[in-house]
Image (tube, rainbow, N blue to C red; front, side, top):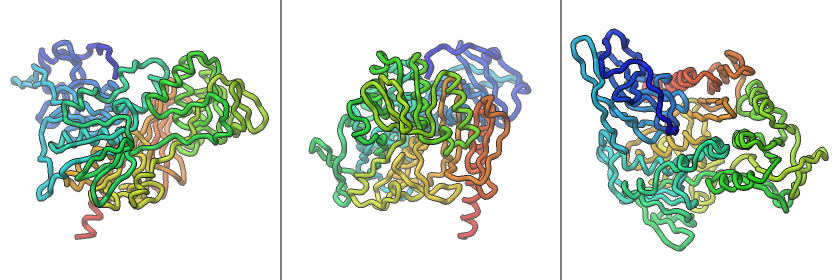
Length: 525
């Protein structure tokens, strides 16, 4: 994401490097033609690609090699060493490739090859024996919807693709809205995932500022709030979630804001310009990221939440205490074990009678999935839209992805619904391929990250409950691995300051899933 020129380090690969200096399975950063280059060796093959992740610029050399791919240590994007393609979200853009020449006992990086924006090795648009849908309509222009639209084109689908979004903006980088953008350290031009011209160039019709009001399942048609209609051969529901609002009387006459969209983030930034003190209601990830962003703007911040520790339900007591300590060291004042009884124009009254002056109130108490459309058209619902392992709903040809999808977790076998950006993007990518008949099981290990000042927490897996916690390192020093154990197995791992170990934990869970899949196959043959 950074536009700064990376500092050149390591050898100049145009001058050649001895093959013996790059072991099989090793990576090395150097440069060629004034640009950072990562080389990696697999057997006798030497690969050379751009050294930085195209998502936020993470150093790929600090990542993990898996087969002929490399994974970014920051947010677990995955790139092909052979093609440069971004194989898995959150990265959507490819890295450049370089030509490698071998001469005697040396190799040389000689020439840059720009990767195709969407495609390098075109796959057939439809799996063998399948039929391409006449058209695809995507309801929702967030993480899942955008990733699906792009993947349809990457997979060679040439039919009409229409993506319908309720916001006036193009699909944007929602995680940044509560982080650097809100803090004022990221410009707005970083926020769009793609430019309007991108969608035009790839024949993705983006309908902005409109909402689907009805879905005719048998007639394969959606109707929008302006009365227009769109026919579909396949449909993806990616409607996302809405922030949970405080009861209206409680917030009457106050400046109470919520954060979900780019417009919401802009509104908070505008209101914060004249604010001296802000009360954040909710010690959720969003609430605490907002607190950190507003402290970066030198605003006094108070956090009010009913729990005794922030994020304890998700991260456990040790990391909960760590997160609280980080925020307190930056001046945030916590009012835990309390709720807001009354919000007035200039103050917040707590349930114990305490009064906090407040120029602005930002609420982050969770989100609620948008299920109205799915319920209206009769899809199976149970704490979310029920989908199978291919992300298909109870209605053939209609898929669901992102915050609304409740899917079978490949590791535990239980149905889960995950409200994470990367999961939504990866589900959108899988759903797109399955619309084309791939029959690809969604078995990606859930991943999310949360940033608080200069500390980032990475989390892989999914643990709603656990039997015990194993801690390696020192959470209070921001250097640890926390493993959440259920039935003797690590079902989730959180790390602080140990990005490589987060990648390794993800890979171990993937191997466990592969083993379960192989066992199931053997049992059915």
